[in-house]
Length: 357
Image (cartoon, rainbow, N blue to C red; front, side, top):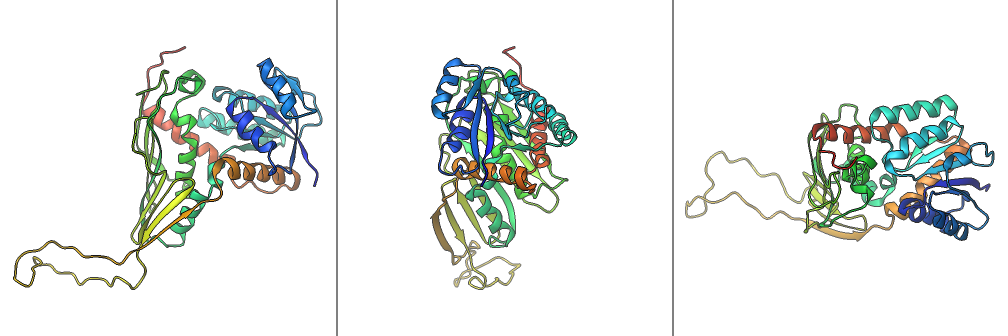
């Protein structure tokens, strides 16, 4: 198998630890890190140690003219994703760009058109859609195991403060753009990326962060004939016990990215009750509450494949075969653009004061 040459732009937590971590792992059988770009001289020197034989640059434009690059990973600051990706695509590079895809839906579509115009590949790093806790829940919903699913809750909550660049609007920071692509992409996935999906309610607020971007997000998505999707990203939830809950007429699935609990009823074990229109009474003719003890089954288990290790490897595998064999991407750029449309809508509905220019 021929390895592709990779250039990584950015050696922050994402570029170094997530993308770089994959490249240095035994899961990487597809890529050689040929170039690393970072403004920080110390990080460039560290990159030479991490990827022996690689060349390093301070400016991504120093990659222009290089003919031995098969893919560029764009792990720049969030506010730079669009401009850097467009520049790379316009110069004929295949690009994998970190989330958020861009700041606006227009920018996303412009990048998609730029890639098509230049005959190159564009992919977006939405690794959570490969994780077991999403794919398992999606399968159980689609095969009817949980019955008619009415609501799905997605929670990325905790009680914590941040004071880094991710708290600044000018950096396209905030929980919606930073964390939001994970639950929002899953939410739209549960809705099968229905073109009629809409934001039924949204609220953004700044509570604990040192910056001016939001650290509380509430978004409710709906689509005709589909479950209600309740998305929450909160820095003020000290009792967050799950990330995903699927509630259906036959049971409930609750999970984190690493484990799940399932409580459900089996067909035939709880025969339908005959409707009684009058007041229910006991043997002494006294009125009683309508209640029964259903026969439930309970199950717990672990998930092996998470977003950051497995999901990252799957993204890079998908991109490899898209480049070498023209296979379609599992996660399309059009789907990633819909994620940004939701985030953009929430921001339009909840404008926050800009405190840092």
